[in-house]
Amino acid sequence: MTNPTHSVTLLTRAGCGLCATALERLRSICAEFGIEPGTVDVDEAAATDPGLRAEYGDRLPVVLLDGREHSYFDVDETRLRADLTR
Picture 1 (cartoon, rainbow, N blue to C red):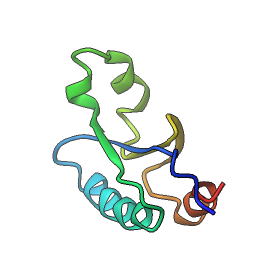
Picture 2 (picture 1 turned 45 degrees about the horizontal axis):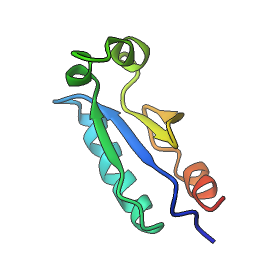
Picture 3 (picture 1 turned 180 degrees about the horizontal axis):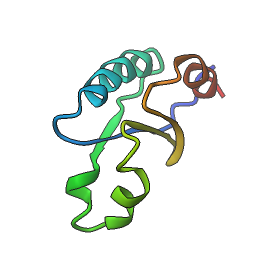
Picture 4 (picture 1 turned 30 degrees about the vertical axis):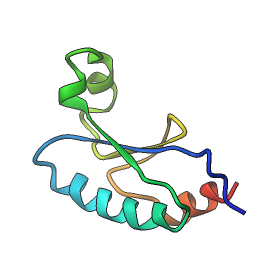
């Protein structure tokens, strides 16, 4: 059984090839669970939340599950699917 209350967010930045690939994979996985992943550009967000870019900016893309870091550089598909079923 899936938990429809999960939120999935990808931290990204413009021009990041790894980020584009991760978003494509994330959309595919999340679709299986009826979730639309959100995205946050850390460079744009830095205007109001500079800590976000300071924390994650050097290891993008970063997948957040329910607001907590889940994986970075790559989408951990097996783990994400397992966590989305909880």
